[in-house]
Length: 133
Image 1 (tube, rainbow, N blue to C red):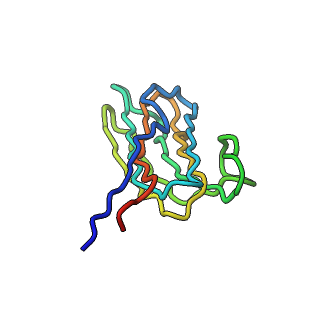
Image 2: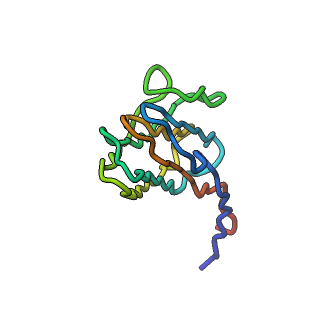
Image 3: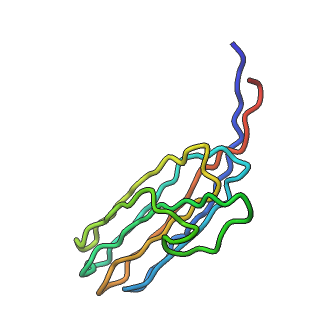
């Protein structure tokens, strides 16, 4: 049986940072050449939890050209998954999404929390090719 070797590249979609109350953090990845991969998302509430929870939204764009500017769902970006954290103080929420091979552009959006800041991050292990099939 032949051995298949996958090339994988770590990608930072949203670097770990505080997101102000009523704020938003977005990051995009151009996946026109690669073959998908897992995304992990982490949302951490502070010592005082937010009034409304932070949501992690996974959006994709079907554009064949350059990655559209990061934005909420609309003409280019379409929401395919939403995860909701809690309002519990100091709660840590971890979510994952397996990006299908056909996705051309990916965006992660962290938003929706009110009253208090949260810390958020999103990373991906991008599969770029397979050899030895």
